[in-house]
Amino acid sequence: MVARKTPSEAVTGQAPVKNSNAEIREDLSGELLGIIKDLAVEVRPNLRRGLEVELDSDLDTDIGLDSLARAELVLRLDRAFKARLPERLIAEAATPRDLLEAVAAATPRDELGRHRGAKRKAP
Image (tube, rainbow, N blue to C red; front, side, top):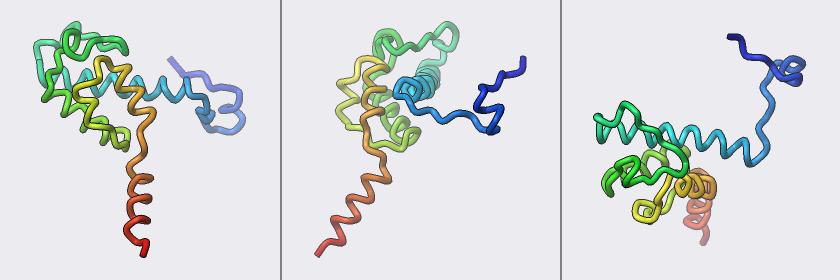
């Protein structure tokens, strides 16, 4: 099956820029759910078959992530999204939707580093 190009793609040869929050969140949620599922299968290989991870799945009861797995998950999300997520997410996030909200609101690491560097150089 060949993917159809949008009118703007056909003219410019480039995919349209995603500019709405809904489009950006949809992309984020797909990647986030994939990261969560990969970790869940690593932690509990017997879950490989039939594991469905949705935005409103419970991280503990539906997905089976204990506190150590949640800590690893927050680290993976930090790396994947180049964001600095608060450590409190390990205990407070109940669903992938909670994590998505935190990722969407997180400060990018490079931006954070720029602010820190500026403060260190000030007299």
